[in-house]
Amino acid sequence: MAEIRIRSSVGEYPVLIGRDLYENELPDLIGRIRPTSVAVVSHASIMGLHGKRLIEAIYPICGGENGVFQYLFAEGEENKNLSTVEDGYEVFLASGINREGLVVAFGGGVVGDLAGFLAATYMRGTRLLQVPTTLMAMVDSSVGGKVGVDLKGAKNAVGTFYQPQAVLSDVGVLGTLPERELRGGMVEIAKYGLLYDEIMLQKIGKWHDGLPENAEELDGVIAACVAHKADVVTVDERDLTGKRAMLNYGHTFGHALETATAYIHLRHGEAVGIGMLMAARLSELCGLAGEGLHEYHRCVLMPILKDVVFPRDLDAGRIVNAMQSDKKKGHVMRFVLLQEPQEPRLVESPGEALIMRAVADIMRDMKGD
Image (cartoon, rainbow, N blue to C red; front, side, top):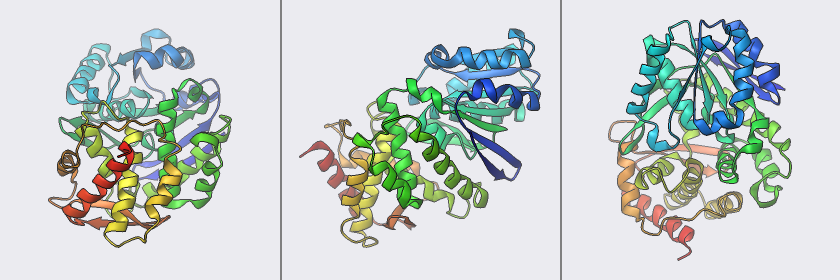
């Protein structure tokens, strides 16, 4: 088992990465938190696959089933909204959850974001435990305290920073993850490689078809990604200096792709992967990077994205318009671009014509036109 410590303004917490952690680590972890009750926030499908193990580990610590409640909401990014949050508040209130309770976010990124926002805002803050079940959540979204929900046409427009008591990533559960979701997580791993870690890129470059040949190879890669994020969160927890903003590489384009397709056609990892291709092309077009950066990205990302079908009715204008809702700094559109691999830069307002051309070039490539 690997343990990585995250230092934040409210203290340190561990990220545990390994196998059989529900049985070997979770009871002791909850025992130290000593909650009056536990609310598990998840999806029915995840509970069906792994919920028995989780609940059996929690029950003895919380006095049996009377101390454990569940709030299960419908799957899909389109359900990560304030209406779902309000339903969660009602379940918490009816179940008697209070500030001495514990919210367990048991699922992927959507669950982690929404459950974290519930915990941060219910009764002005209830303790939170992140238990991610997808590769993407394990390497990125469960770590660092960003929680929130979407508004119509604006991804993650409502949220806050709320650090968990701990993150517990049992890598064994990835054995039931659909290949499409696994590939989405691999995009996030590639992101960390492109931003910080050439050795990681070399490792995943040896994997056939963009995926590891055996699951155990993922353990060290997940830990390496978390270690990189821990370094970033320690120096820029609330995204104030620009250091943490670098982790949004590909996300400005990716969020716009998700919004323009109503969160239905492309999964988050697929959109971010295409977004990194667009960012690499924009890096070339604005003169930050030399020719070849986009092709390098294609070599890294296309084995992972090989089965993605780009929506043929989507045009570049819709994507660029969707970016207007994703601006975090007033009227300035910011992009994380690369001067070269492992040398990210924040670039403000590179010009709509260049942005439109970068989007159009990658769309043409993805569509095979």
